[in-house]
Length: 317
Ligand code: NCD
Image 1 (cartoon, helix red, strand yellow):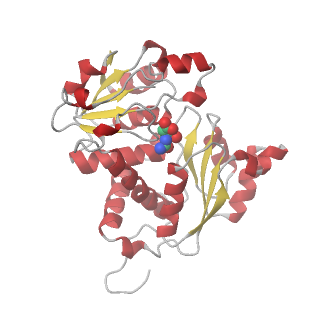
Image 2 (cartoon, protein in one colour):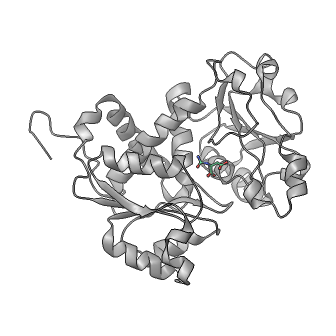
């Protein structure tokens, strides 16, 4: 059971716990009305010290669809941090008001710190360039639903592999399943951090290769995970401008890909996928958004101990 636990990085949940979570998310997709009161009377706090539209709204929609309510802030200036309050004090205070906290913070390690002082479960909604576990839950559920499996896949990770936290979390999660192969497609300046290679791929025995041109790799892939160049993590504008359009997936490149390729993107997209690709049945990034809400519903329900299937014919839980 996940009741009362914190979710800080992909390893916070075992592979078996993930399976149970996805089973619940699929049950919610099939019968959403059965869960519309699952979290009645419970409060989710969304503390976003860094901008977000999708992730914050996804959490809030998830809680409201479970019958719960939400409170919080969408930018740091709206919190007492702007008066100089420490993160620990903010979390201690909010954990007195809410039953579960989803937090995004620009500092790596902020979510772990929050979990150490919070009385209620903390969900990391992104800590700097480090991790973004609920995006990974979204990605895994999308892969499981479309491919019918999470192992034995060739996964291309393309774009900003250095700063992209969704990439770091997905690599860590997919390396836990057998026979996954990774193709790392990036310019030299945006290569995946060494620790992912030495502490994730190598211990897991996962095969990986590094490629510069998307055209050279796309034909081998089961999954192509495109990412945005993370402007906000660059130290100077010139480097960003030089690297931002390193990869653009368009209809020409899609012609080199297999019919059963699945294209994912955590969104927001800037230029890295041409809009002409959206109509291609292999483009799954908008379906991914919907999976994200359902998997967050399942996660919140389980963290609050409200993930049990409703009793048949019984009326209420
Ligand atoms: C991602 C993030 O915040 O890391 N977005 C998201 O959560 N859907 C990806 C990004 O910002 O590029």
